[in-house]
Image (cartoon, rainbow, N blue to C red; front, side, top):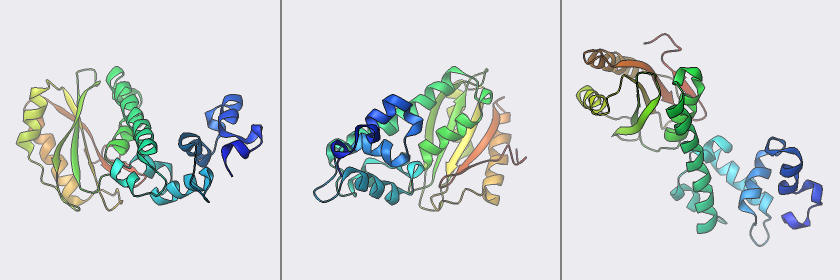
Length: 224
């Protein structure tokens, strides 16, 4: 069924205007963005297919354009619109982190790390560089590895922190396997980086491990 064939009160756009975006189910929100389906496949069926392919909204927000291109029915225009929405979400979180101290709302750092790293198929080590008030200066990928591991060099992390005049950092990396549980190697690396950065008076506030739909904080685990 197309959106136009639905009763007015059930159409996602009218429902959103009348009751707010929170009243819409995931599939309705996505259908509103997609607008049209395929011959023999309505827009709601296409939206359900996309969500199933990526494991829900969280997985879709981590998808890149190449992954979207594998879905039949997502042409260049639809892929561009979805990619734009995903990037807007990332930028909104980045702006919030830049305007307010991260510990005023620590979940924002987790949300940003999840959006930034959650969809990667290779392991990526990123650093959020913070000023003296713990506001975001920059968030950058410093090292990229293989499907299962990457090499991180403390000297390069220290150099990057000094170049950005950072007072503190939040470390983050993903586990492409989807399991966010920190490894002993993660704990050892955190200790190494904490010691190296302390020599130049830069604090390590946290190390976030990103999996599929979950972000684990080493600080919350008492491992910093």
